[in-house]
Structures are given as C-alpha cells and as structure tokens.
Amino acid sequence: MKFAELNLSKDILDALEALKFEQASPIQAQAIPHLLEGHDLIGQAQTGTGKTAAFGIPVIERLDPNIREPQVLVLCPTRELACQIADQFKKIARFKRQVSIVSLYGGQQIDIQFKALRRGANVIVATPGRLMDHINRRSVNMDSIKTVVLDEVDEMLNVGFKQAIDEIFERIPNRERQTILFSATVSERIMGMAMRYQKNPKLVKIAQTESSSANIEQFYYEIKERAKPEALTNLINEYKLKFSLVFCNTKRQVDEVVRNLNDKGYFANGLHGDMRQSQRDRVMNSFRRGETEILVATDVAARGIDMNIEAVFNYDVPEAAESYLHRIGRTGRAGQTGKAFTFVVGSQIHKLNTIKRYSKGQIHNSKLPV
Ligand code: AMP
Image (tube, rainbow, N blue to C red; front, side, top):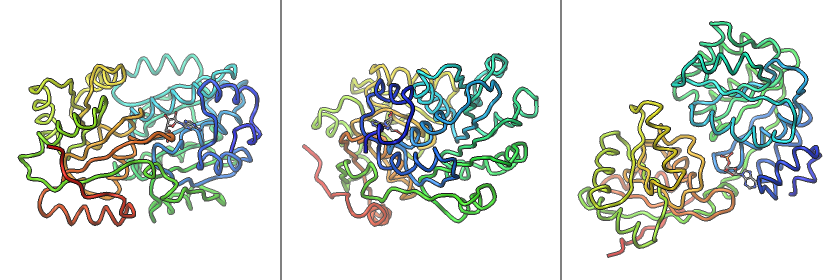
C-alpha cells in the first residue's frame, strides 16, 4: 500500500518521501488508519517491521503544534531505543512547524534535559525510570498528555518497569486518552495491562511469515566451543561481511571475542550493560560511521540498534526463542536481505530445536567453510 492512500497531510507525505519510504509496511498499513481515527491499539510487531513509524506517523499527524505542553508520551525500555524513536519522530515531523520532541533517559545529565523541557516540548520520548524522576522533580507535567505509546511493552515488563509505568499512568488524565501498546509478543501480562489502560483496543499483528525473518537466511553449525573463534572469522571472510553483529550471552564472552578479533586484525568493539553511557555512545557512533566492522554485544546492550546489519551471529545459542528472533531482527530490515549464523555446542541442540519450532523451521544445518 502506498502512503498516499492513507489520508495523510502533505507535510507528512513529503517527510516520508524524503525518508525514501515508498510503500507502507504491513504493520503500518494496518495500524495507521485506526490510529488516525483515534482508536486505542495493540500492535504485535518486532523491530525491523517499521513499527516506530506505524505509531509515529499518526501520532505526529494528530498532534496540535499550537499547544506547547507535552501531548504525546512514548515510553520505551532503553535509552538507545528512546534516542532512535525521537530521531525517527523528528524526521517524520520535519515539515511540521512547532513540533518539538524531547527524549528523557537515564545516563544523560539531568540538567540538559531540564533545559530542553524548559524550551517547551509537545512530544516526550522517555524511559520510565527517568520520566518518574522528572515527574517527582516537577520538571515535566503530564496534565496535557492525550496520547500514550508504550513501545516494546514485553521488554519493559521484563526489565521491571511495571511499577514505574503504573505510577506514570496515575499522573495522566484518562479522559479522551489514546493508548497504544506495541510489543513483539503479547502475553497475559500485556493483555492485563491493556485491560487496565485501554478502551476497546483494535488488535493488529503481522503473521510470522510477513515478519522480517522471511528475508533472513538462517544457518546453524554444530561445533566445539574452542572452534568458535575460527568459525567466526571464516564465515566473515567467506561471506565478505563488512558489518556484522555478534551476540554473546555474557559480558565476559563479549570481551573475549573482541580480544580474539582484534588480535586477528579486525576492527571489533564490544557493547555491554556494564559500560558507561558515554562509552556505549562512542562504540555505537564508531559502528554507525563504519569504523567498527564487528560489534560484539549482549542482548540488553544491543536492544534498539537500528541499522541494517548484513549478518548477525549467535556466538552462543540464546536462552529464549524470543531473543533469537529479536537478535536476528537486526538484519534483513525493510526489505533488505540478511544472514544469521548460530553456533551450537553439544546439548544446546535441544535449545535450538525449540527455537526452530518457534521460527517455523527456517534455520538450516550447515557446514563451516574451510
Ligand atoms: P523499526 O521496525 O521501527 O525499528 O524500523 C526498521 C527500519 O525500517 C527503520 O530503519 C526505518 O527507518 C525503516 N522503515 C520503516 N518504515 C519503512 C517504510 N515504509 N519503507 C522503508 N523503510 C522503512
């Protein structure tokens, strides 16, 4: 479906053209009409499906730029994601005058955020903890909020933001509030949240086959633990990969893989939860600029990385099938093709079989290049 068929203003259509978005993705085609009409909505979609624009486009379209108080609140689990959402919103709002978007997240000096808020914001993109901090300091006011988006709700619940979210909702007037939930999975807990905060939500989801994993070639290799370093570089060389993302289950493993790669002359950098925000930003920027060829990360640190990566490696089999889908969703974005490689040691094959069932058996057993 073309965006022109979706009843959008010229300002937004021009911005989408500048972004080179030609066709609406399936989640966008389904969600945007409901959201433009002001309905509440539960959207089931992973990263890579275009979900940010699926809520971003209608939310910005409906915003009243003349009101200089926060009208739209987007909550998400990590600072990286908050920055990306704010960034995409700014691009969508590019030709709309007086739309001002402020992101509030932990790890950035609060003074900078005070200043941004004082200048006036009509859209707030925040992580729940830092937003509560601002609410308690009275630096932000929730009285005029009309639209709330909870992005990656499953992740926010996983990392323990339930209470902060409940407290935030207590501060938001619920008359005429539009509440939008987006999540990769829709569990009972999420439905509970929907019942508490939404009114007759529309449900939209994209079937597994329509999701981004359809254009990702997936392979796995049964190997010994000690063969992994060589397997990794062999695959990088064989497929002439310029930019890849390697997932490890532990921070220690991240450090070790980075060290191994650096020793062999690759430009690799690590990203994990123990690093300071400034260090993480430095690593991400270097990857964005193409100076780092291989980013090695834990699940938490990599959440929200929004770039089209050629290949994703599971250096370790992830603990849950869901994280497998999340991990490989970093490649094959927006119609591009991608590759995913998984290393399996011994009895981890059982874990992989579960993942295979979950992802409809698209992961092929393969032999390493020699
Ligand atoms: P998301 O699922 O929101 O993380 O988006 C994944 C990527 O797809 C982002 O880099 C977007 O800029 C891009 N994208 C979103 N919608 C479209 C579209 N309709 N056409 C092309 N690219 C898109």
